Image (cartoon, rainbow, N blue to C red):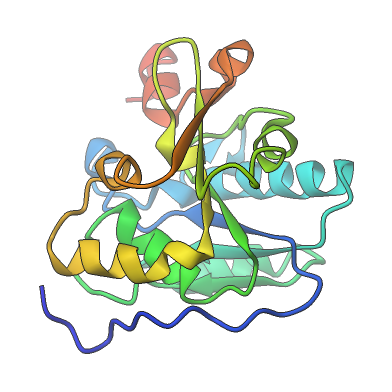
Length: 215
């Protein structure tokens, strides 16, 4: 892939921002009838709002100075309307590359637009993110450029913390159409952290919906 929009420059550092939360809602929603997952409702509230509520709770619990970026490739006006209900400024962005290239493209967009040293990734379709996950992963930032939680069954790469210094390499991966997130992660200093005690909270909306007869 050769796209002139892609650059390899890392954004300049700004004092004070310790972590960027990246809410990834840019997919096509193929498993839910091609609907935008972040706007689907669970317990009378859009999924993206469940995730954002968790973000503010986690950040406040450990006293973080943080920023929030939400990635979506459609229905931006609806997202913007929802985000206005939050007192904290949240930036809404779309992938820099067209074509719904998946979460790696969303992560690239976030890394290109943050000054935080690390990004905490979050899929929009998990309405019950693991409590205490941010603090647990932050404690390993001096050991690796990617920190991946593992529940009792598998790694959870879309809940990882990623160094913004990896932007140049993630750009190269996208240009080569190497879009599988965890395969890309494993080519770097990738540390897997035990989160088996939090296994039940990694459940996504696809499974919840199937169990509750919503899909």
